[in-house]
Length: 261
Image (cartoon, rainbow, N blue to C red; front, side, top):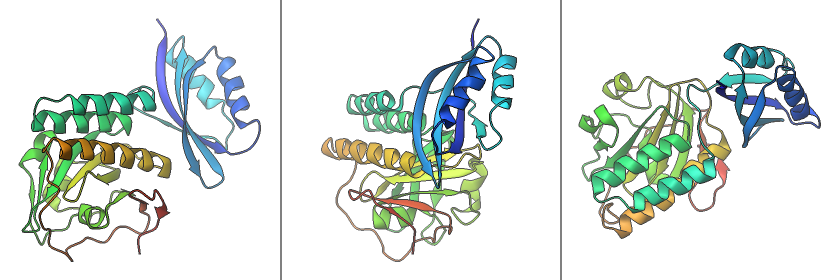
């Protein structure tokens, strides 16, 4: 019975780097079933590999034989092709029979697309509070108008954001429910926000954030056309939470990578 493992590698962006990876895998009889180019980080390239080997030990030995300048992180679960995953998620959202079902399906597929461990949909209310839906226990959460929530920054600027967990990103009651290492948020529209939470300390990259932003933008447009998301109303200004200095943002429509001011 073959064994599968999903890993993320970060290696120098130079000729022959991937060939060396393939050689180390082949020496242990391990195949690359799928390779997804995630993006670039500085002078490195980041790829997701789905590996198949005769045993977990064979895959482990092959990975240990990678060159020392190759970093490896292992995901708990395997995932499908990201392009197909996005299409499946949009189709499921479009065919949902109700608003609640649409929220649940959209958030679930977004979580698969982003390789996240948890998800929620956050909605801004006219009094400045934030309610949650589509996230299991998060459905009962309410963030008060004066409580911190970094998602307000994303909503006011209509920009997707990702950052390593920070104690100021949300009030304690929210942080207690979501033990996370990385957070990504993308606007669904003027008042609603897709929140994706990655428990493992595997950073979201700019290219992943662009993918998440595109999925949220199209999903939100479909839900607004069906009357399942609000496109009109008012939201109090000036109640944003500052983002960590390490945060990455992607502006809606323009798709420009920016650092928060």
